[in-house]
Length: 159
Image 1 (cartoon, one colour):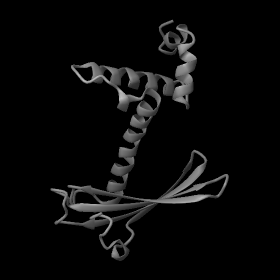
Image 2 (tube, rainbow, N blue to C red):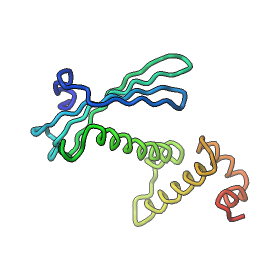
Image 3 (cartoon, one colour):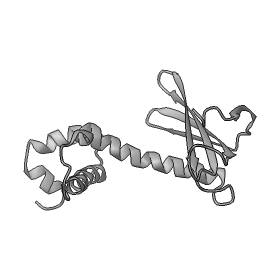
Image 4 (cartoon, rainbow, N blue to C red):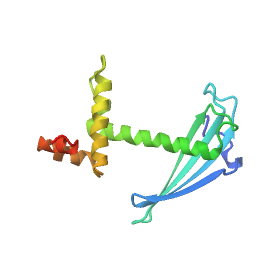
């Protein structure tokens, strides 16, 4: 709530990117404010990113506003760099999303020793191997590979 209540209307737009893909057009706008007294210890900049996504088939548009903070000062990271960092973070989140929705990783009962880390490595290997082979739907590909024990070995070049 503290980030949302900053005077964003008075802060100038510092960057804009447009990207098309996955059947949509997305425009991202970034505003950055130098801060010093937030409830986030060490916060030096507050970031507001507005994403406008338009479905190219239906024309339906959605707008989402995301807020973030960073300990980097304005001299250490310009708005364009901050936008790249935030965008890079979503790349990591998309991998976690696949692991959670396809493998139910968040519901896993593994809690001790190296088991959680080992299972994450196996899941990442499966996702990476499937993506390298051109797969776009990981869940469907896992089901297909589970039906024939030779398929995963062939995918890894072991058969």
